Length: 308
Image 1 (spheres, one colour):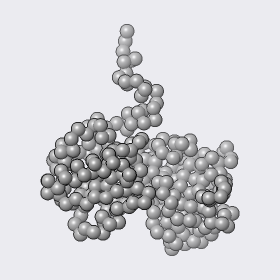
Image 2 (tube, rainbow, N blue to C red):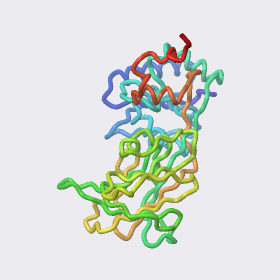
Image 3 (cartoon, helix red, strand yellow):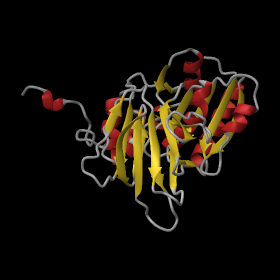
Image 4 (tube, helix red, strand yellow):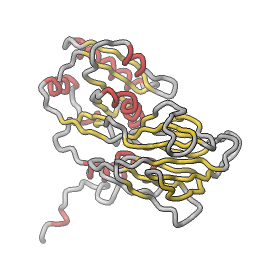
């Protein structure tokens, strides 16, 4: 890997993340890299400026924060095939990011990247656009939105909690109507996020699939559905004259969806690319540790399987 043009994004409001970003910038500049750096948060989005202010390809995005910072990087950088090195600095859960405790010195990280001693894990993403009229109408009425974890269609109102009625089509065929708090359309990566909290299945990120999960449905027969990656999921809001139904992408507000409109959600053309440094990287160990499954609360060594 070349390190000629690098962007560094740190978690806004985190001094630990900012100090780490400053240190990384000095080290990369000493190696001859051109570095752009900025914060990412609710009110800070450095990616449009980064992407528009350089004519040369961006070789690497160093993302210092938690899962939210990594999700934001994926949404903005996947379409340009920019690899992401996400390090959990000042974050919390850290499903997507490398642990900063396992990175002794960042100088060693740059040496490994320059020597191509790393792996790249591709993570499926979703894209969505709103349309007006019947399913055959493909003229969009919104921007294109991307998500690494999930698209969520649910109402939002400052005055009251609203029950939504959503009709879902899969590849142009009506499948069900959901009455409840909303609907999740997630990737395998997002299956351990909002989706698992809504009793959806956990799907290995090595699979390509779309998971549809109703949020607190009023019908016990409304169950999660796992679809092939080539499917198009269309969601129609019903009986929402006030326009409270919204599309959320990885928890970030996308756009309002009015009655008579639908949102089409499908697999994005470009996956997110995450750099993996750990030679013993294990998805199942991540599940045990992050979800605190049995065996993760002690040092898990399989001693119980030894013969007496």
